[in-house]
Length: 116
Image 1 (tube, one colour):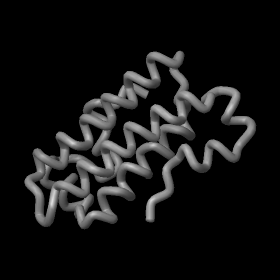
Image 2: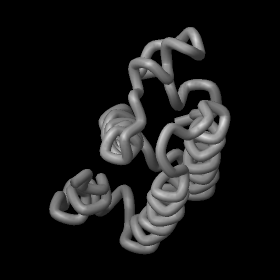
Image 3: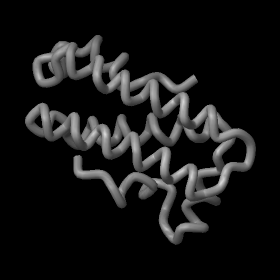
């Protein structure tokens, strides 16, 4: 099961000073909504529906990042993207195939909308 980056961050004192608990709670809310949407996609979902779910969580994370003074750094970006990819994979989404059909690499599935 994918572990939210916020769980890891809560145990790292160096991270907590940059990302206070209220921000972590908002990130958890965004990921909770994302997880629910991914679970609701069902088997063999349409690519556009999958990308709509990805877009929504990425845009929400953009807002949180902006509202909290560009809180996400390069390491955070890797953690956030990895989590999104893990959740999708755990729900049966074939990321390499999804990305290939869109003409991108699997690691680029958030790039169209990501500002952090």
